[in-house]
Length: 380
Image 1 (cartoon, one colour):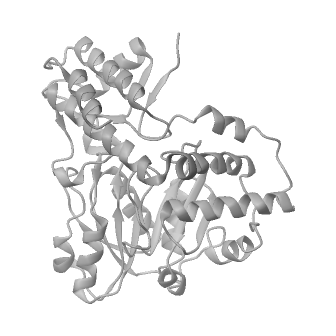
Image 2 (cartoon, helix red, strand yellow; image 1 turned 90 degrees about the horizontal axis):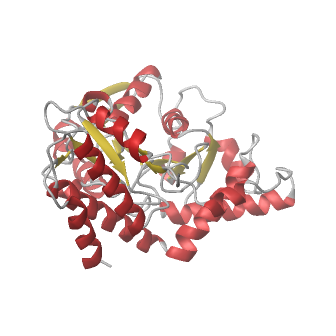
């Protein structure tokens, strides 16, 4: 009985009012009512990305938006500098290689973000782009994008800066224009509080001018931008998801306010880390400057299977936690605390985690939930 706790770091819980918006009757996507809807959504999305420049919406997953970022800007054989910060950075690199790009990978331990210091050592005039995941969903580690941008600028080279903001958009501070990002990649099912199905690119003037020669058709920016000027799309748009997106953007921008959204996520993330430390466990992120505010990845002690903890939590307490991915499989679980989420939801989530750890026989100290609640009271 009761509602399922969906505490994976995406897809996240969809607010009831967003579901009701999605359930509205579909309209003609070539008519004036749709043009007004599209115009409202695109304008508000610019505010979320903090950009004045074009914003492209695809009926796709975030992976599609990754591909669009690459094929619109790069050419076969181009070199890209990328950072190994976790499972999803590795997947983006694999995609780049399959598309015919040469990926120069800066190795990482999955516990730290992209190293700005490596830019001076590794970036050359031959690199057409730098690829960075802002918030690595597999590890709960944030890369410091302004420092990456500054390090690139100091080299005197001029590659494009491509940033994955899939699990930080609408949850953590992100500034496409101010931080000098050329292409930002986002999607609908995390901080934007929608089901999967919308991929996003925010695009700088430099990226628009840097037209690569990789094959593209569906992903081509130019027809989308041209059609968007009149409120339309060159393909059938996800009309009902756009209804939901308009509703979620009203919640984020007009009702709560983006700065307060970020503060809420920061509070919940710090409270979660307080709980983990009070239990005597360790978070994956090893640098205090790089903690994610969207999720916390927790290492289980040697000899204890993180997936067994997750299974027990699901079976006994009807709560889903994120699995460990790649090299963290069986070693870590992830607590999502992003999107449609408040203090009481966090208290219930951490109570379920504490109960599950005890039931699974993981040795933990007393007081994890109490430590989190104390933090929430301090920062209210």
